[in-house]
Length: 290
Image 1 (cartoon, rainbow, N blue to C red):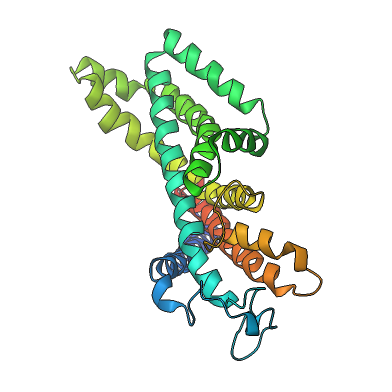
Image 2: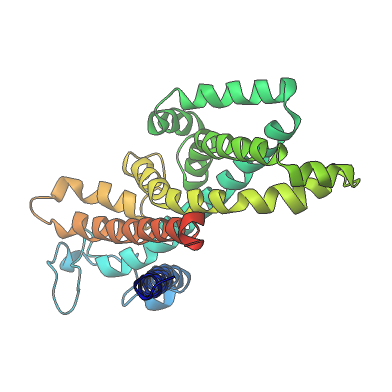
């Protein structure tokens, strides 16, 4: 091996280390931002400068100022306080929904991939039925039948969102099921629950986690959409989608009533999408093996 080849290898190793350190720094940065959002949602009640539900008609529709950084709405309520309070419902409802959908869909996918047969056929045809319709349109229909409220909105979106995770988990399970190490574990006498818990689930958890993180932004937009259309959170409860719906009629005279919750949705969705992209890149086997 000549000297030039050795130098090239050293340069390549340094580039790989720089790329890994850069990716890790990005992951830490976006994870920190996501944690800050969660902390704001948890302690929203203590962070609000004003009572988010207190009405003061004398201060109605005031533009942003030093007293009210995001202005006030048509009832004189402080928009900053309502945006902060709205983070609790908007963020935690989204995370609960994504968790429920991911767990339910993964469980169904594993069952279908492992057992096959009629169970697999029936459940996959049901998932095809749900996937055949636009998700938000289907959610509107389900939410309309169930009625308004954040719980019914979560149920409506959960009903139409699980097939994505079920399909993914089923495909990953089928791939793991045919692998040599799993056949060896079967021959060693491992029971089905042990095979699923110790071999299948740990090996498919990575792609499922990445998909769940990437799905947070989309789910938040869908929840806000249902609230905007009156099928989610009901006024006067602070929630970003319903706040946009409440202020849309005054978009020209008091645009801050829409821009404040809209900006909160934009920033939150962007942070979780960038976090999801970074997690996907960080967990990519090609990147990690380089």
